[in-house]
Amino acid sequence: MMDTPLVSIVIPLYNASRYMREAIDSALAQTYPNIEILVINDGSNDDGDTERIALSYGDRVRYFGKKENEGVSSVLNIGIREMRGDYFSWLSHDDLYHAQKIAAQIDHLRAFGRDDLVVYTDYEFIDGGGKTIREMRLPSVLPEKFRYFITATSDLNGCSLLIPKKCFDEIGFFDTAERITQDYRMWFRMAEKFEFHHLPRNLVKLRLHGDQVTVKLSDHMNPACDLLKYSFIEEMERTGIGLPDEHRGRIYATLALSMARHGYRRAFRYTARLALRHMGKQPVADLPISIAKVLFAIYKSLK
Image 1: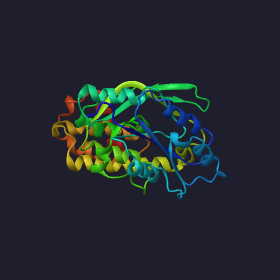
Image 2: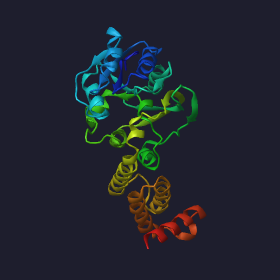
Image 3: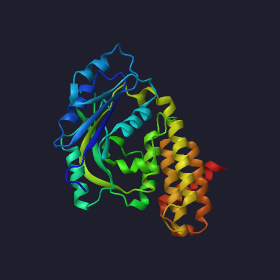
Image 4: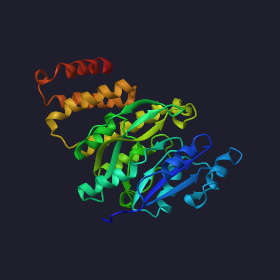
């Protein structure tokens, strides 16, 4: 592996004039010496404000404009096609990188002597003014359990990842038909063939504000996530989740509880049925009381 491989930071823009300077500046402020920044305008309709700011950076960024608004998947795919780097890093226009983000992830790869790992980090939430709201500390998950982890939770954030270009070469592009769940669909596909490694450092700031796409599309979030999680669970059941059959009942019962807590009704009911189906392979007396309560709730919901 090269000592300082080129890293491509891709920043999607859509009516982004309010926060984009901070995002671009945080990318330019990286202590890692070998980066390129791709700034891609997804058909902004803000009287040219987004474009004017992007162009003001001159040759410090590679600017791509004049496209129809098609959603973040299309922008990320342009970034993948146009990147010159060996590694891909996504930065939303309203979020920020800590200055050591890329350097720390490259150091992690060097420590393992690997160039085929996806490295994810912890992060923090900030408000519109940049004040920290709370930090998110993620677990270090074994590769064989990673797809279960991103099914049970929604804690992994795409802007915390550093992804080898070879992953996209093998897996393909983001699904442009999905505007809400395209990132988790990609990580699920990617985790089947590539390992995700946790770097336990807070290196990204995620901004929470009223103009976010996830806020504007909040009415569509739950149904889209419900369908996504359902499809993940269906595939794990079909292909196996890397655990002995005798534990699947307990695993699915726990997963059903997670789906219920998030309000994913379709995913909950499907996972609950799987739990009941597989539970016959494990004596109920051997179950923790928490799992037994879940099973009782499942039983009541399916009557």
